[in-house]
Image (cartoon, rainbow, N blue to C red; front, side):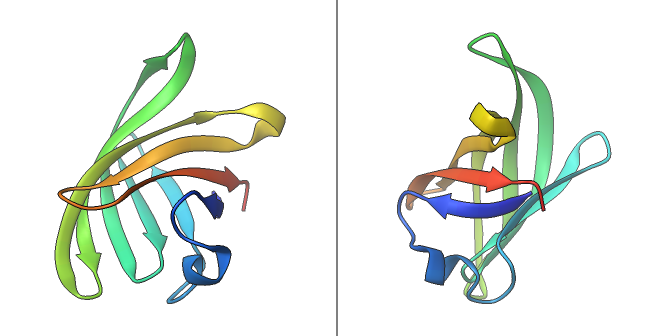
Length: 100
């Protein structure tokens, strides 16, 4: 999934190091990257407000500093993925993804 919008960071920042993305791989793994942040996901699938949802914790680096957090994502309108991303003891932001 291509991250196309975040509440806190503008579109120029999203693709700073590589194309901003959220990827789900296999049963429990994935990856998120935007700006100078890259994290590896530990995913659990379930429901939120009656809809299918992926909840995840993540661990990685932000500008070469160790970083971690959590988040969730679900299919929203027009087949886009919507969710919220949290950095432990830091920023958090809603996000929107489109199929990449």
